[in-house]
Image (cartoon, rainbow, N blue to C red):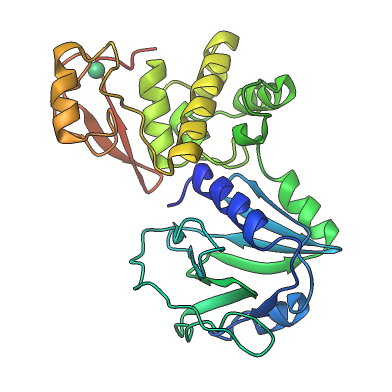
Length: 302
Ligand SMILES: [Zn+2]
């Protein structure tokens, strides 16, 4: 599932390529016809991400997209329309488009796939949304209700600084729940934007056992976890991929060379049954609420 870093990259790309330009909106698949008709011909004013959701504001209408497990946007256009070709669940990207334009100077898009829930089109390019778990037009009250159910998103802090209020919300949310920290991190009402990979890797980095009850974490453990998640998400935004293991990490010692040659990106995620690169214990995996949880019993003892 796309995690928060992908949504923030998506929001900045939509902001850069579509906001401030009159757009054409359609629903090739037909399931978003009414919403598309409402958004068509208008000028998007602002795009933002909150956790795993994208919101595009057009006056009192807000386009809400949740990519879910399978959703993705693909982008195509001429050379002035530059950015990631696809954002969301991994998808193959088609061959390069040779741009052609209509009489009004708008690029002629390729025929959409029948599965495209929405197509957004501006003079120099277009994007197709496929497979989202949610694609809807909200009014301001509905938007506020959605936001109110979401926990703090670390990527909504100003870059390079800590928002004490958001950290305080995270702390309160953890204290109010009687669930393990591993379960809490996947609850978007506790913290927004963390998915399975960031959960596994941040708990490993912090040496926290996935089974520790969330209300038993000390203030300093929560602050440190928040800082780690923030840093890992920020790296994900700037690199476009989740990499939590660096070949120059001091914990690796001589194993750094193995990591470089194996292009390994994670400490524990999907490495069950192999020795931990930090302590040598065997990395474990089990199901928790339908998602796979990965951890190192040697390192994650708090
Ligand atoms: Zn270990």
